[in-house]
Length: 250
Image 1 (cartoon, rainbow, N blue to C red):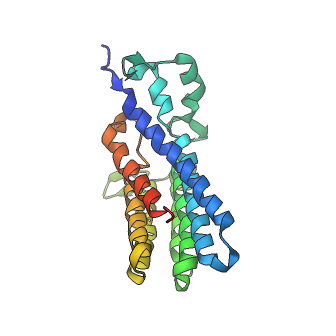
Image 2 (image 1 turned 180 degrees about the horizontal axis):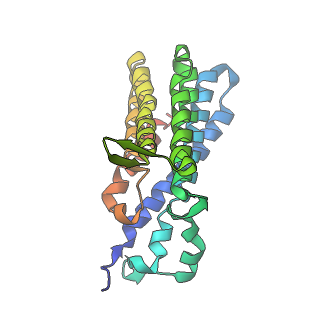
């Protein structure tokens, strides 16, 4: 039975989102480099966001849609052109989330850990700039989530039994989700900043806050075979648009 062709352009939208992570990483890191030391808060924020997008880019590359696009089994169609390419697939299939890296550690654990570490680093600089009294509690929590979700199940092979119900990988799910939710601290800080400013600064802070919310909604799922639909990438693209407008210099 031949599987119906999947739309290649939907996968390409995912690739665009991944590329924009790198573009904005370079943009923010360059801004951090150019920001004067007497504006240290702004310098740290730009550095943190730049590193965040760099980690997002790397984690997406390790789990990116090009593998599914060229997989002959998936029958991906790009405006009438079949994208199946066995040679490219054989080279890139190591990026599959099910690929075993070591022992029972698969690529998905690497992807999730990098994703959470990127959030943690960005949160570290945000906390240091805006809420130093928090003593980096969000950063420490995210780092714990990253390493516990990475190490718990694949390294120990542990399974959790509750009332005779088997929860294999429950710790991974719990800590990954909690870490993912903790990302909310970044847009929240932008909204707090918006409440303390006026005019163009307030508008930009609001745009940046909503931009980060839109990006995080689906950046972790864009381009997968089961989530390559166009509407998966739209929130990310809208988020990057908000970031571009919010960073526009007048």
